[in-house]
Image 1 (tube, rainbow, N blue to C red):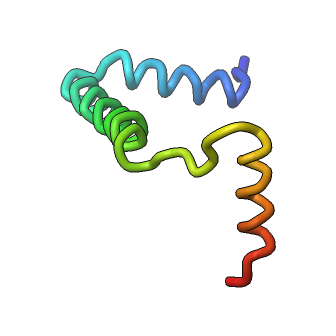
Image 2 (tube, rainbow, N blue to C red; image 1 turned 135 degrees about the horizontal axis):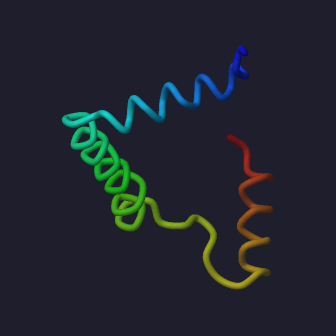
Length: 69
């Protein structure tokens, strides 16, 4: 009996990841790099644009929407 295509694709990836040796180390390195990019750099370089109370945030948004480019 022919299995569902989604189940076959899932089994293909499951078996492939289960049998990896060097690939696991590479995936670990990739995940660590992504963590550094999105978590650590965001803390130091990308400060939130809107700070303060709700009225201050609303004022800042209004000024940026009305200001000419």
